[in-house]
Image 1 (cartoon, rainbow, N blue to C red):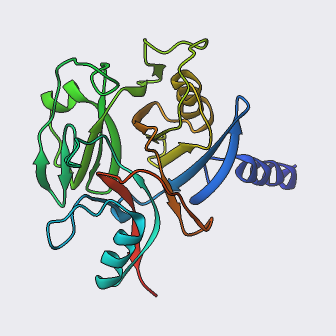
Image 2 (cartoon, one colour):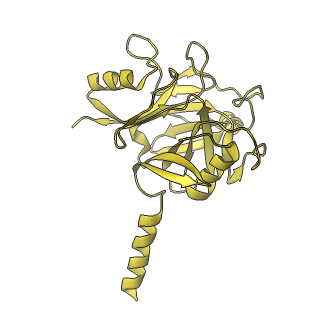
Image 3 (cartoon, rainbow, N blue to C red):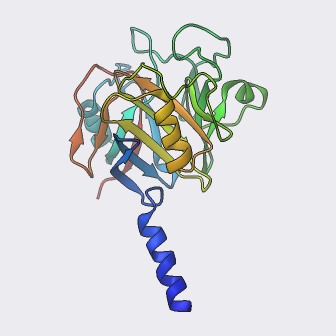
Length: 244
């Protein structure tokens, strides 16, 4: 009996897409996605400008910058919305320094479709926090990026999402699961907000998840040998490890 229990537990571990650290492809509701999971949030970083105060904008530029620092980029994706000059829309914190402030008012476009939220790494913990809750009880984030709308809020889908929406775009976002792992997701085709939100809630066990952007969504994954081309980015979020 004990052997059967151990075997069943092993099967569950191997079958669960949320457990493996790294990047992998999966299908949800007929749509293709790539998910990059990070267990240790202290390895995550948020970038915008280089040492010369110039917008990084591209994965190859980020790789060059990290190489000078003795680090290797394992994965990265666009990390939030930005203005024409690539400044972050909403809160942007890197290395504890706030470079753009929190925005809590309702407004036009996806960002202003409340509730929106903040992805924050505080100490050893990653979290997605609704923006007004963040304002009411502000954590000390080493990195933080604000975007919107939220995909999932305390286990519930954003109230504006509908299963029959005709709005489909390439999208990316981040959720934090019940065990504290961060799941960075990009759709490999055009998807609804609703369908991507159910991926976070139902497949990735993430009670809170945040839309980062659409249309300009791009992914770099050393593991998958992938470096998406596309429009020049503003904020970039990803994992950088010491070079071997």
